[in-house]
Image (tube, rainbow, N blue to C red; front, side, top):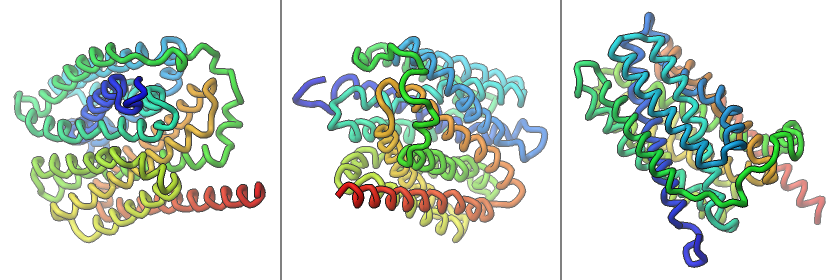
Length: 399
């Protein structure tokens, strides 16, 4: 870190690259696992089980990752996650070749360990710059997902027919991307003062941390924001195929969706510092509502494209804001358990929505799926209003 450029230093730039590789994995999995699952599943409603396996694996791994971060530190723990990513991609490749549906689900479940690691990149970003630049650092690392936005969908499209087995090339390429990530991570130096030297039992009990209004709303914003995004994004490849649109159109929609998710990262941190976290999260809720309205107007390419782009921007505002809120609610010696808990709720919600998206899109259709997504959006809006009222009362009492 340098005093001249406290934000964009070498370590942060390399972490941004790792975030891009992480999102390349995520987006490619979203783009292909539902379609590969549909071709292998015994019945149609099971098509998104490989997607669900990925997020269930992430939820299952949160406590394991917290312990590895505590024991090994950031770098080694992140590299372990990348090693798992490489091996699980190869397992998924073999499952596709052997046409083994449950092996594919197993492979994506194991890959969830990498996802649980990658979800901590944004928190690690705050450790690589000055405290005053923390919001911007988180935002910029999330912006690294633009690499995944460009590479992920196009990777799936370019490699779809590279081998006789559809999407085999994508799985093999993801294993190479994970190997590159291991090498990049080796070059990152995480400051000594942030290395964990304490027991996970140190600090306040987790129950006390969870009961804080600010942390409760951080969890709601992150989990439900991710849940709505995942519910609609996981169903989009299936919905577009059902509507007769070619996979090239699906790749285009996913590309712009992920651009919407991460391009705002270049300025979301600045917006939060200027207008406040809750206001930016509120804009995210409004964008989710607009997305749903547009999705309900029809199923042409432009409607999928605009709706999913706005969904991505809305997710960015909610998720970045939730991360900023969460970091104000715990002390350094409470870091690992607090971050693990918020990621557990995120993965748990994603697991539910991953299964729900496949079941709803194949049985009820795209419109019912969108109408159902209104519920978590409204709950998030009410949570933000409640926290704003709590903050107003605190200011009144302290004045």
